[in-house]
Image 1 (tube, helix red, strand yellow):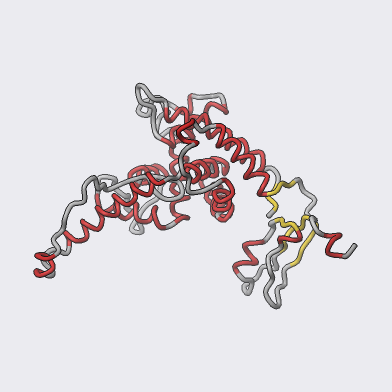
Image 2 (cartoon, one colour):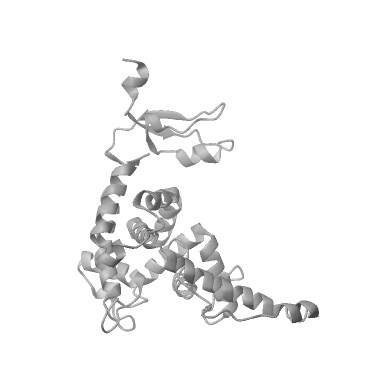
Length: 303
C-alpha cells in the first residue's frame, strides 16, 4: 500500500499562518476540515500547515442529503412537478461559501446562525422561474423610471424612443438569496439600527430608497444575507407580531422554544390569511431544516 493510499480518507484541519502577507484564500481556509484527497492546491511558498481533525465531523454530502430528504418530504404534488433552479448540493454550496459572513452577522445581531441558514436554504431550493419573472418586472419599472428622469435631455430620442410603461411592472419584489422585499428589508433596517451613511433612516415610502435597497438586495449577496438576518432579528425581538397575528401578536409570549422558532421562521415568510396558513406552514416545514443545521453546527463540515 502506498503512502497516498494510507492517508486517503483521512480528515485534516487547515491551519493558516496568519499575518499581513497571508493570502485571502489561505485565510479563508483556516480551521476548516478537509478530506486529504480534497485539499485545496497550495501556492508557492505557502506557510499553512495541517493537523489531524479528531473532532466529530460530517461530510457536506451527508448534510445535503439530509436537507434534500426533508425538502422533498415537504413538497406537494404540484411542487414536486416544478423546476427548481438549485438542487440541495448547489444550495448548500452557496450557504457554505458565505459561512464566515453568516457567522459574523449572527454573532453581531445575537441570533442563531441556523435561523439564517434555514431561510437561505429554503429560499434557494424553492427559487423558480416565477421569481425570475418578478425580478424582471421590477427591472422594467426601474428602466422606465430612468428614461422618464432623462426626458428632455435629448428631444430626438424622446420622440423616437419615448418612455413606455411595461404592463404589470412593479417597484418591489422578493429578490436575491433570501428572497426579501426592499420594503421588508427597510423595516428590518430601521428596527435593528441600520442607517444610511449620513445616519438617517431609509424610508419604505420613498421610491428612491426602495430602488436603492432593491438593487443592492438583487446584486449584493452579502448585503442580502445581512438583511435576511436583520429581518429575523426584528421578528425575534417582537417587532412584527406572529404569523397568525402580525399586528398585535406577541412572539415573545410563545414560551415553548420549538413553537417560538417555528413562529419566527413562519413570520419571515409573511402572515397567514383567513383561509390559507402559508406562513404557519412555512414555519412547520423549515423547522426540520433548522434542526438539521443546529445538529450539524455542533460538529464540523468536512469539505
